[in-house]
Image (cartoon, rainbow, N blue to C red; front, side, top):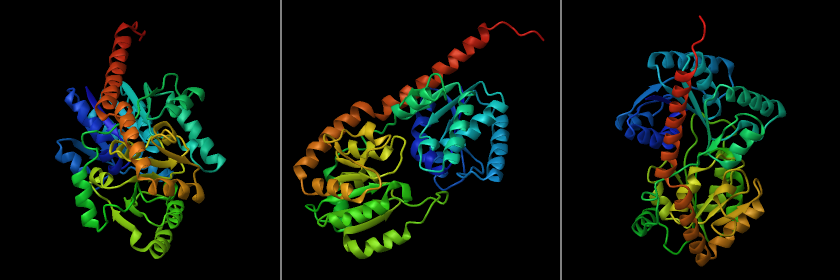
Length: 386
């Protein structure tokens, strides 16, 4: 079976799709990745995958989207796949429409979060809902990463049979690691007994960085490690001013580490993970932190509230509020025993729910089952009169 895995940017392909592509290839499928050009494409190619780059855009510009859908149609016609598996809101809409126009036998979609559930004007959110509804009509296999998104899809009649598949990471890679803790802390000049709070995400406003930086002023004995960067395709206000202010108020307690490939080791060297987002799908970063044995401080929103058991594996606070976030971070930073207890409980929960091998096997199985069912139905249907 030939499958096109289509997403928006190279970051998404590398961090979210590549493990699935490897799983599908192990099952004997021919898998081709499609996304916008970027440096992370090369790493997928080095693993033996053919990656087609097209001018995909993460904006609502009609000119950009027309150019993207023309490129998608050309790519799909050239590749002649059995399945188009689309991801992310905008690229997911375009890929499914292009697949329909090209008569692809199976159109699959994984929802990583709905635009109509994100803050914005009623016109933007309403338009997003209408587009999701229309795209659902041409989707054969409809997957979501969270249970709440599957519930939304059914309640709003976006699709009649949405399946929540979750996200996953490898617990053999993301695990407690005393050697990494010693090495990383030595490299960064951080004493072993100093509480370290770590945030791993793109540097965008909706990840809650202004609130986090302000909250850290009320957690005086802890360091904050920021891991990540702003993507060229990211929208919204710059965080430069917030970080400049934080560098003045927090001084050496703030360490900006940029984009890193050793995320598992950095997590293992930390004590508390924080993700104070305003909206999410089902964050991979929380899964990674839980597997590394860290308690999680996040916001009471879709996604994190499915992952974190408040008071057991971490603490959930209201989004966009500094005081509750500061209180939660301060509570854990001053309670190493509570951190360890919550971290151990979080790792057990993550292994039971978010093991990458199990999650990806489930997705691959659904793609194959859906394809086999479609072929059977096509073969058993009476021929149409000419």
